Length: 235
Image 1 (cartoon, rainbow, N blue to C red):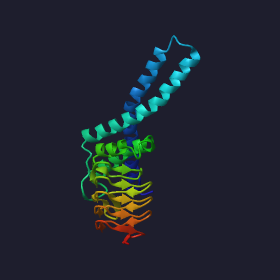
Image 2 (cartoon, rainbow, N blue to C red):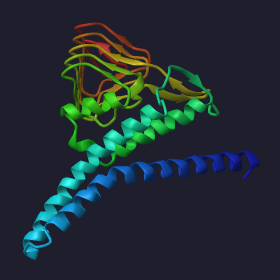
Image 3 (cartoon, helix red, strand yellow):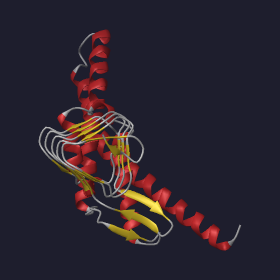
Image 4 (cartoon, rainbow, N blue to C red):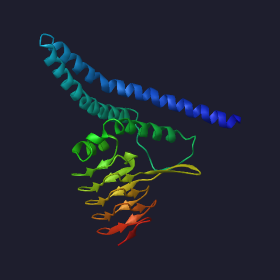
């Protein structure tokens, strides 16, 4: 193994451990109200019959999961604001500090995605969470996918829908590093099941992206049109 490869591996390992440490801190903060609630129920039911006490404790544990989920969302949003983790458009080499900011931002989102995201899809809480993560989200936006990233570079207009398992990203890795470009989704847009929207796309109002369609980087879509297929075409 060359020294350069060893150095890169060492740096990657360091940043991985840094992400783990950040995860421990965030999960620990989010778990605090859950454990406090369970402890309160355990103490408050001390004089009750054991079987009923265990039943109430089971309900407390189940509700604690949802307390954890919402506490995690709030904690992640606060961390993003405190550390000013707002991305900007541009091209960034691997050694650029923006790469670290991008990694941390995605790690924060991943913490919610793998633990609680399924419970907030297609609810007002998903749009609210994306706002906390820096996205500009209009009224009555419906999001049914976990594969929406780079939120501070994302704009979604009123009444738009992102369908199940659709992918919307504002980044790409290329030979010269990380590329970040805004994605703008207009009003009353429908992005279908498993569709893919790449960085730099600008989707006009009332446009429909058919299921499975793939929009290459920088695609500009006309208003009130239907697009389908790979390298999506107007129908």
